[in-house]
Length: 414
Image (cartoon, rainbow, N blue to C red; front, side, top):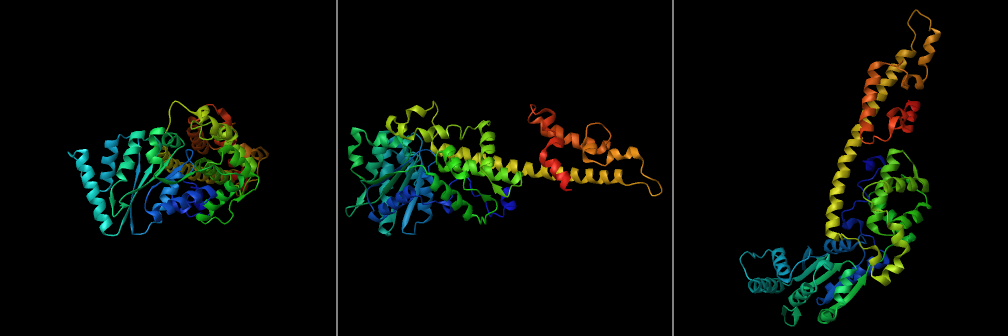
């Protein structure tokens, strides 16, 4: 909705991972370099971990978008799979029929598939997202798949991306054999204030931002504090900030605007940013106690969270269209009211204007509640007020259209 108003080619802060918006912070650049190193070596495991929303899936999408034709890559976003379920899922990703086959039969067909690809000079890569959901025995099954070899070279290479719990799984004593196959690992960190600013500007520039709206430097420490420097949380906040700037016709996004948006979001159901400050302040403590202080009874996987935010993106698009219709309706009513006002103010051709008609010379009288205005205009206006107030019964008379400051300004400008 705000993209056209600000001259942007697309929404800069979409929640769905898009390789176009990959931001090479020092930690993200390091993780991407490790993945490239793993590809060049053609063996071993690469492990990338990080907090929820820190950009692990984005790194995977960035890697896949930049692969050449010599690599055959598949990506799986895991749930809590057993070893047998993992083997079946990997086989299905390589278009191998698995119905009615035993695990031994599936493994034999997988090996034949890998050998066939190797004979064509192709490298086979398996990207496992949300790997922290895998039981230890399933991670061990991944190691067994890496035992498929030809000419002393692995036929399958695997990269694991997961939340911080994955580190605890790999640190178990019975995972020693797997750890010896890990040739590089990286843990993503949240952005500091300077990186937060660079990230926001980077995403805006990708969609043709030319400084409209302008961004005050003072907003970036506030954004960093309330998002804990987590990319996904920055996206959530900045998307709302741009919508707010559009609705308020703000040429400059100020610290006050950020504070207003944060206050609005703090009252909403999502709570997406409600604990951000606490998480940022206690980041050091969380590293020592395993994050137990902030664990909840329901842990959402990154894949589940991505699906949820994709749904929220769709809902946002629908709401944008609803707002556009409401704005069009308001403008229509505004035009009708202006027309009525001019009719009231215009004297008859051969008559002088009575003194009593002076009550029609101000917007306040025409928009007032004393019943002196045109009944048709009042009916349409009251219908809009009723529709707008029905979503928030607590607003009372203060929530009516006539009392909106932007509506009064619109009438004044007209």
